[in-house]
Amino acid sequence: MAVKDIMDALKNESLQDIGLDKNLAQLVKDIKLVGEELNVLLELPKAGLEDVLRTKLEQALSEVKEVKRINVRFSKTPDQSAPSQQKPQIPLQQPMFTKRKVPGVRHIVVVGSGKGGVGKSTVSANLALALKKIGYKVGLLDADIYGPSIPTMLGLKGQRVTVNERNKIVPAEKFDMKVLSIGFMLPSEDTPVIWRGPMLMKALTQFLFDVEWGDLDFLVMDLPPGTGDVQLTLAQNVEISGAIVVTTPQDVALADVRKATSMFKEVQIPVLGVVENMAYFVCPETGKRYYIFGKGRTAEFAAAYNLKILGSIPIDPEVAERSDQGEPVVVSRPDSEVSRAFIGIAKLVAQQLG
Ligand SMILES: Nc1ncnc2c1ncn2[C@@H]1O[C@H](COP(=O)(O)OP(=O)(O)OP(=O)(O)O)[C@@H](O)[C@H]1O
Ligand SMILES: [Mg+2]
Image (cartoon, rainbow, N blue to C red; front, side, top):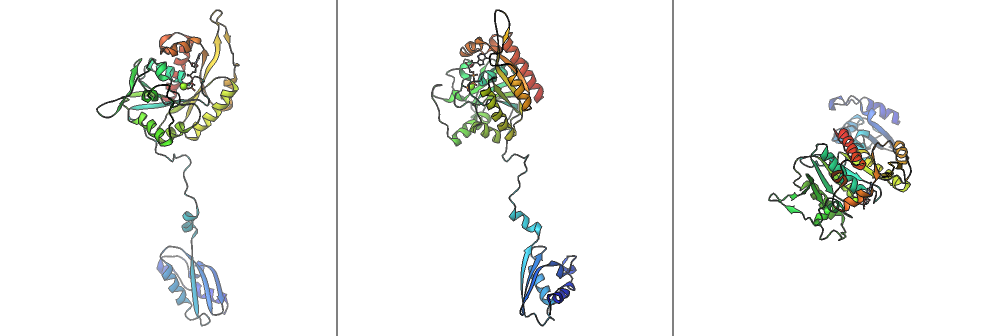
């Protein structure tokens, strides 16, 4: 008795009565006759069919005297075994986290930079004021936990957070704009704070979701420099319309822009564009422009990385001076070249977000 004869016997055993358009031989993956013992590996087309298939096999071979014992094992079909062997598939385009929308806020725009000191806070404050000036309802949130400078820039030093009867944080109001800074929570602006992960995450989400923002078209957010925890926490938990990356034209700053933009892309926050700060100096006597850090570097860089330049802001000593006095340039010198540059950026941002 050869295995071939056993297979012939199995071919005659139809499986139609159990809903399979096959015969039993077609399920055999492996078969060995060792003395009087037959070892069979059968494909299991559906879970729960083990017993019925075993019985059918025994019936089909009941007349075969050479086979005294039958051992049956089952192998799963490729479809059945697939889920346990493969890693769970996460669709690439789908975020792994639940991003929440801040109630009442139409667009959150984050302002980031790869490097510190490039003018991120100056851009955040003046962009917010420029958006306000062209007719939008605006809020400004200073999320720079390491060095909140918005209170100084807007003349709100010493401001403290208050909570209303609905247990919501009430933002300050300045220049017809809602303002909240992590600095309002610190004992003094010079106190360094060490935020640990969960604490930081809680403070940030509270600063967005537990605030009486009212109805806003834009909430501009000043982020700490770099590509750290704050950026990630936000990206994973909050619906953000877009990011603006601030740089100066030096190589060192530009190299860090690359890191910042790829970080935003990775966490699926659209990069609206780059703001080139301290791009040139206008000589007050002659009106001539001096490109102190080099001309065209940012443009070259932006083209290489497919980034849009939203605007270039000149160096103006008055920007720093007025900032320190709590009078941002868009408010204090609305007709200056710097202010016009900020209005231009605000228009492009509003245009992009619709
Ligand atoms: N276009 C400009 N012309 C002149 N001074 C400027 C200009 N932009 C920014 N500054 C000044 O440069 C300094 C740094 O700017 P700012 O605080 O906005 O930078 P930042 O990127 O927020 O810094 P940090 O990393 O410390 O948060 C400030 O004193 C600011 O007033
Ligand atoms: Mg800053």
